Image 1: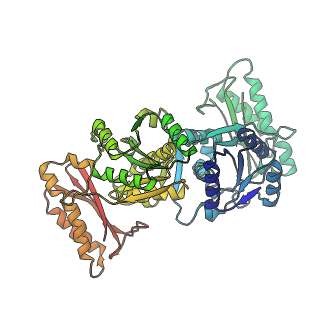
Image 2: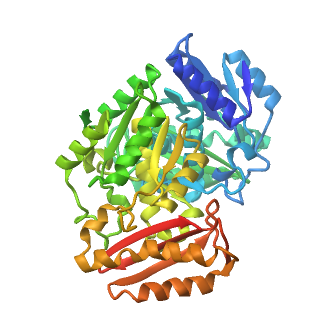
Image 3: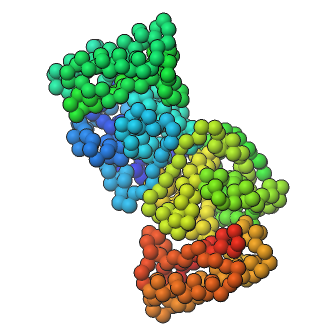
Length: 282
Length: 282
């Protein structure tokens, strides 16, 4: 596995592979890898085959964190990540510095005015601007045919797909299923922040998804009603504080008034300062 | 010369050329071509050579016009443009429709927060957002190694270069000199709007550039002083109304307080509803 830290070296390498018509599959991450990330690497390998190149990136992108958020304490363990990537068959690991990605005087951003405004975008107003900007940069540096994102960040995948469509990026986005702990908790680097009591109660997110799926199994239910039921469920956990729960069309992200099978649920729940998200198709 | 109207067909063609390592030189235009545009085509040919492909695009991009501006009456003559492109040796002419470029629900834009805020960006606040967005789209569709822009739109070229640098687009920007009529007027599709009296007085732009160059030849002059002198010069033409005149560093676009040789001058002047721009290095 090659480790590349400069933008110029990574882009040169990508151009060399393109000149030889070697397809590149790309998995962008913020590191502190878990089984979820590794499932994306596996998917990228399946997509480009053994003659293709799988590139993973590890970069904790400052522009997607608000000043009040957990940028400085976001978990990092590069030595462990390198080993996991090597074992998972990554060909090139791209680990740029902040100075490489946002040199002094940096001033260009990508914004999206529809899908990015609800849910995560409402709770974190500058988040998707940062996500789209870094992902566009990485696409231009790594030049992938296909990039793989996790379904756990459902809205992120939708916003990135919208950016790729709108700006005509010459690549394909693949969204891979959420990987879960045995008790249902979606894998996330942020799970590490949880105290034992919080960790135990954190299963309330996946339980809420199951609750909603059951609720609409036979007939549609009003979104307001279902939201208040989910909110009540979560309020029963003393460590949990609901940020939002939303029911919406999985394509357009338009809120549903009557929630029915096939709609999407997404929610965000605070445990202390730790904010966890999850989602599912009903 | 091939004429391509669909995004998918253009991108497919570009990918085919890339797979064969054929370099692509790109000249984006809004049509109604003149000698200035054709000089860019010639430059693109020089850059990619006879084995490369020269792609020109003609698209009057609605997102770079404000609602009050001249989008609907922007001059168009596709038949003439096609002939000019063919004669100039363009290999592929890309002429997409609005529906191809901005399908229903379009919502992604590129913004720049520094260089794009002064001069044209101050007079036309949404202009560069539209320019950057369409240029990024065209880059992703045409996949050029090199794209050629005219120096007449000095700030545009600077903003696009900044976007390419910041977002790491895998291509090179070349800026080619302004082509002028024999009396010094910079060539522009908008010159067609001018009445005979306005056309005669429009030489005041290039005269202003010469005036400023002379003024700083021996020693620096205060920007305020030089601005008021240029404003006075322009006010002597009864059809002309100065929008702005600016003196600045050509790299950073930072305003100069003392104007000296090597600084850049740019100005915009209205003749009736027609707005002309010009610039020069002093």
